[in-house]
Length: 260
Image 1 (cartoon, helix red, strand yellow):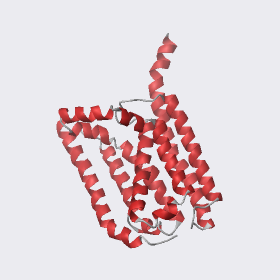
Image 2 (tube, one colour):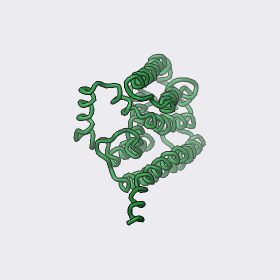
Image 3 (tube, one colour):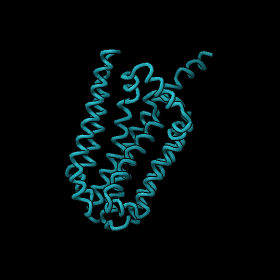
Image 4 (cartoon, helix red, strand yellow):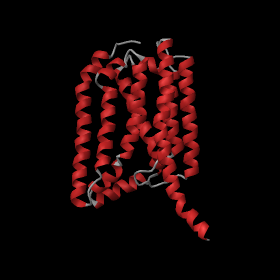
């Protein structure tokens, strides 16, 4: 694997760290403002947010991120962190709810109208989100994109932004932590979730059997297994939350039917 963009990545590390630190400060400031105007913002949601941003930082700067440029196992570790674990933690931090609490009534109404718009509906639909998330991974690992992103720093940044954004979008479309303008049924979300998990597993096996360009066979085998089992561990949390939400949603109906 080439190391051509290593110096550029190192030069950008300070900017990335500053940006991520700003994201944490803005969230915490909004949490304090929320406490002053409404009830206390749950501390565990702030912990989720800080943890999610921390794992983004681990994926983009520092020793593991540097190693990921020339070692596929390290790369796959960052893939799991920025594409799966961080999005899950950020969704659990409920940032949209905090945003609504921080905005004025007029601004909140504008945001609400935007979230109810047709483009947002299409983009946040579980099928669209899963396609962007899993489709992007197939594009990354089954084309020359994986090789090219290590040659061009802008492409490297765009790929990682996509991993994070698509991962967040997919997670948020499966488990509704924040208010949602257009809710998909549990049945539809369950079908999309199962299909996405199956596609993720298939891709990990393809990587194991047929490595991306420039990746040594031994690293691809270990990276493929890490993607398969590591992804399953994070998905287990996602499935648990989804099933709990479905149980809570269905429980009153079961009680009514039983009493009827």
